[in-house]
Length: 552
Ligand code: FEO
Ligand code: CA
Ligand code: CA
Ligand code: CA
Image (cartoon, rainbow, N blue to C red; front, side):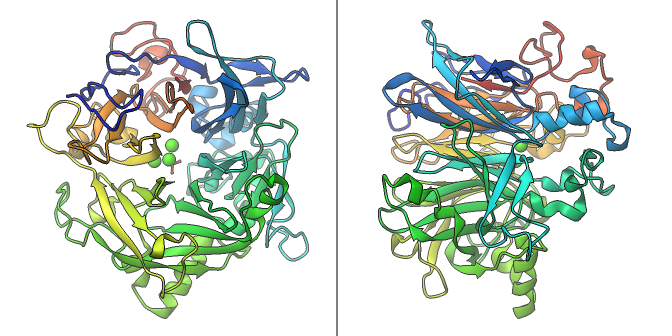
């Protein structure tokens, strides 16, 4: 079916059918090519040799003035894959060199990119912009209420590098924000599938977790800039950030806490946003107040597993409740206890949601939240919720200023009678709007649930591989999710981002062939479940190790 959203160079395409192929598939008239993949080398002009990290997730394009076909890509790297990187999956069994390889492979990359004569994006190397931030370097500076060695020694004034970078966001003053999410995975806690980095440095261990789990700000235009972790934004499983900036008004940042039954937050700055005053704006995230969304009915719940008719309301009201950020606990643990002390059951009724992934703000100020799924309340497929602030004022807080919310697009099977490419989405994750307001959605059905995986749940069989969708928000196709691109086997599409001219959409392909780690034999490529991007498991072409890659 023809998608035909509001017109942009991308929004008029023939939707592709769901696929299980080990390939990155795009509609007729489009082409996809790999810009960079795990392990690829690039360099700074100071002579530093750099390698692209593992599991690239967030990405944002930063333009270079006067150069339409050139720019900077800020990319982050969420977590390592010990099986594919060196074959040893138990933290205690790894050599120091193996641990260091993992440590280097997370964090951020800043890439200078340029279109070549054929219109393909290539890395410019060496370039003074090219940079890697790793799980060890550089020393990041802490800001805000907890950045203090005397009163808050567990947080202190700095930390080694950055890790668990999931999604992120940009600021209107030209910096990137990268979100530290599953920081609990890096130490030695046997209850988690921990990476065991505590053997390199006790700072990674559970006793010292307070160094990670923050939002980290970086200036992609200055490779010598010291990244800053902003403690005023709270410490939780940060997914991403989305801002709303009105001239001369306090700056607002929306954020999701990606844990089942966790909440949606917003930060309201103390300092106003003043366009053009970069030095002033660079201090905006240092001081302000954090709030959590209280909904009249927080979760979309279903009576029958797999049904798509919720038994809870799909619209209502809510308000923003203030949260204190302290040193000793995750922000969500603290607010949850405070809420429950006032009213038993209040957390689940008002604050717990179906796992907030991306939050994005539309041009009209409406906030869109991707609730990915929550099998605990039989929400297998997730939904996208709209939130409109009281008086459309992003700084509105407290019970006197109720926001309105509505579940805008629900995941799930729309039925076999629907055209291929319009069967529906599941497990929405990252979102982005194009300039005409079409909503682009990438999905993250867990690899173990995807069709083709032994024991996969039947709920997802219609969907096959993860994909990129476009949802037009006006016209005859409004609200329908059209399948634009299919991801390779057992991968997740992340970080969709358009160039300013919207002739290119960048997408990260994260964890292709992920299930190999539990079933494959290291070094025996024929046992791997994906050969992408060098080969194709489905056709048997060029058996090779799958590599997370950035696609244009
Ligand atoms: Fe790393 Fe919330 O996805
Ligand atoms: Ca991910
Ligand atoms: Ca995500
Ligand atoms: Ca996800």
